[in-house]
Image 1 (spheres, helix red, strand yellow):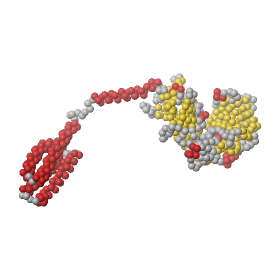
Image 2: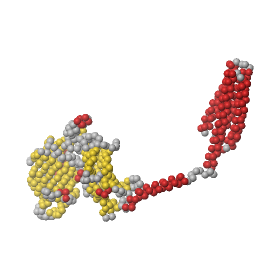
Image 3: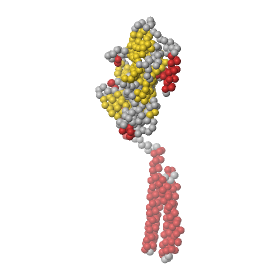
Image 4: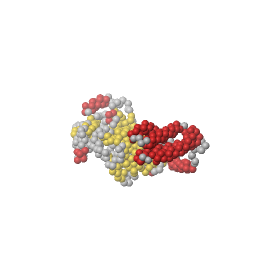
Length: 612
């Protein structure tokens, strides 16, 4: 890592050797302050500009190495009001990227427009705040749970400028007094947790003196690789905010095993650089706050507030060490009257852009503003450049969908948490569209129910389908009567068999003959009942699918009846001749087999007819 830095420095120095000098301006005094107390590096420079040329000068150039400019997240210049004045009231000066002629390709230049031109001998003092992300590099890159986190910061002790600098000083503020090493050059000293370089006098343009600071930095490196904020406006009284975080610990990678026991016993030693909690400073009067992830609600959070702010303290499900990731969602509602206003014929949303989280770096921030359906003539006013496009979101009771303004910005820091405005036109009568849709829907539902309950939806009695259904019902009734008669015949068959058992027990032949005569009379009566039913089934077209089985059932029952009568006569004859038991059994054996087979066939036909 150090060798690569030295090689880049060599190329950068070579590129500066043949650079022309901008001689009209000089920096009579430069005071730089670098804040390294968090993962976000903030460099505040107070520049006193003096015009020694004859031409009027209206801009000041700021120079950054390309490697540093890629990490530049925020740059703002304001007039210096002097000590004791309120700097927050100062208006920012316009800043834009420029490409001056005959300048080295290794530098990126920004132009600061002055409020008025500087004549010969005129001076102007301005403050420049440059905010950088990912400028602190962990070294070593991997640490164990018990190790402290050390980081490296590269900078120049001399202010890099295309102008000559008369007097310059630099102070580097560190989070702790423990410093592993730092570049020791002339006029360098340590005061507590602060390193001071300078003053240095009469520095030529593009003077560059590299320094390296290696120090303990256990501050959390919470980086949101992507944050999606959705702001949904409802004209019925609220702004619903949903924030989806994809978070990673961007510090030194964790190596080895994690011990929960060691961490709980000594969290500030066995997890000095871990991300334990995050603090979200929500707007005042925020309500309906929730904190959850894909598993469900996370209970490790605390919410409190007053008239000026609402603070949400959240803890991840587990302490986050270097390289560890987590994803979660926070949501809350805001009173509409605090953020939605009217300007002429337009309404506009005035709300903050960035994340409410303290000291969180956001690689990609996407802000979605969901406007009410029917909004038109939409425009956005943002305090810094953003990518912008429009989408459509379909929600409940929407017809064409709600317009969604999408704003995207990369490399976002807390300084970007500024107010932006979304202007749009909206017809107030459109607010009643959804309630009217609900009322109309319920009204039509009730009307449909009334019509349904009072209308005769039965099939017409003259329709073919209705007549066919009636005929089929008659066929089913006739088949059921046939089955009942056959069942009664089978019952008589069982009684006829029972009379033979009584004969073998009592030997009363006359009683057995009398029983047969009575049963025979009953079977003849049942046979007469079957004739009209069979005639009806044979004449009905609807009975065609089931008629063959019914006729087969009647025929099998008659065969069974005849076989039983023959068996009964044989047994009675044997008793009258006083034949032995074995002889009687031999004479009826073949008949009994046929009777058993026929009875099984009759039972099977019953089941088949039931299925049909």
